[in-house]
Length: 147
Image (cartoon, rainbow, N blue to C red; front, top):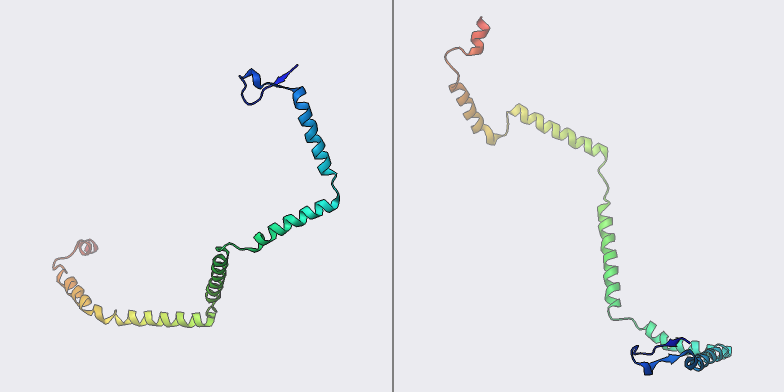
């Protein structure tokens, strides 16, 4: 016959045979059968008892739940404001064309003017330098043109 070991495998006094376990297994089987055959009223009382113990725990919110909801609501409201402010009306093409024309007119005036007033001293200096650097003798280009 096959022997089963208990907690300590090396201890021969702890060996249990299948025949020794048979009454224990039969008792467990009988208990499970009795439990399964209980009337529906028993199971209803069990369910009611369990639900009565679980319900108060489900209704109690942990202290972190309220600040989390407040934070989430605040984020949603701020996102709404950001999206609402970002969807402003774009200028019409007529307004854009007018501003483009005004810019072109300003550029044209600046080109006719010779530049801004603040740069007049620099322009005067640049003209004097170019006048001073004009060679009195003909340049290579002028010589090659004469030939």
